[in-house]
Image 1 (tube, chains in turn red, green):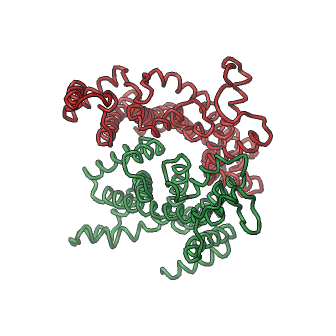
Image 2 (cartoon, helix red, strand yellow):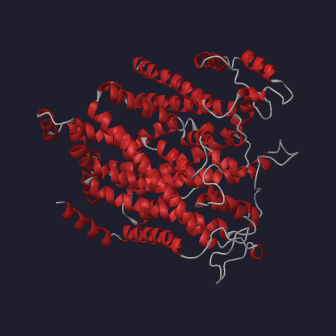
Image 3 (cartoon, chains in turn brown, green):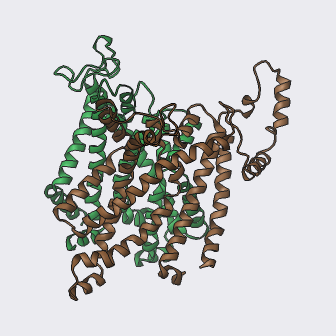
Length: 317
Length: 285
């Protein structure tokens, strides 16, 4: 088991390393000069050149990368070009905001999808299955941002129940009720966004589990369908779902970029999109590295979780 | 053999109501977006005196914030969305197939290299990748196609590689290899025809995904640039007028849903033909 984890780590670490190189390279070739952030138009050419030399911008690529990587590991993530704020400090505010939105949405979608998927899959080709399947295929085809617009119109403009944007009303930052008012719409939109694909997944694995021999044996021993579903099939369906949880790890940072942008939720998504619009490269770079690292760690976590709960994998490894 | 398959397919599509409606819908959309080019109408014709007019007999879908006829803009938008979808699909299919076949056929270092590349490309969420690359290259419809194609080939490469690996064990390919046939010729005339069904199935999903990606990009303002419009960018301008002109937000969204649904439905039908196993499985269950 430990050996397996170790082996997976050996693959994951170089991958993270390569991703940082690629991120740095992308920004290195970008049409942007880092020195522009440090100089004022009044400076002479010599002064600019001196600044450039001082900042190490004339060094070859690998020296610059080395410095940047060292800073990255030391937790010095640089400063925003437009506002001059410390990126690390900014993210300390924004990431928890995103987590507050994504975590409840994902868990709701996760549990709802297990229930709906099991119901649909165990009633394969019956009325209820067809309804759930049809709704989830429409859900897959529906852009999340469009659903958000619809919700905004109906509940925000028309019925005026929920506020349209932000996380708090100014002056009511401590009020939980105010937070829930702001939270409801993006939460529902995001849940609906996550749901259809998960439902499909659970449904199709339920259908294929019901074709397994053990179900036939249970049936021949006279177990009821509900009993087979709850005691046996659901367990086997849940197994791969655990890996989905691991793979959802990067969503805690980048899972709601579009939804956040629409509702002006002060999370990583809005922060990132603003950085993209204002060409704030240091921020873009950090988020790129962060999301890449989280994807790799998420996959690693998924593998380890699967290995922990399913002994068959351990044996074959 | 091929002809028989095609007759089967025709029969199936006439019997499968969902797939038939999907196909008809797509034909309608494609026909509209081609034929609109022959009409004398300008999607950018501004009419300030008729801003945000509700749908009426004169303007079926109403007008937008600059008084432009929304029906014409929606059809032109569909043209852009479909073009981007299809061309991005072709890009990703070509990259994915070449990568997958080379990885599966040559194996060894080439396989390792390509699969690590797949890992790296899959390691960054698409939305991050697409936004970053859109910063680096000039904005325009072709860069959108390229960006979407470049970041969606990994799944296809994986599928094609797996398929190639099993094909390589087949007698006829081993024999071709044994008598010294040029590997390029083997790939071209033996492997590609055999993986074609997989590729076609993946292509329908890829079109749907590309349309979705394009509309998200355009909605975020990093996709199609004004005055050109796609369904996504129409939704972006609809957001600003949401309280005054709700229909502007409804129409493109419904068209996106119907188009993507149709492609997915056709994909499911084709999958049943490409993988006979899945079809028999469906009817047994």
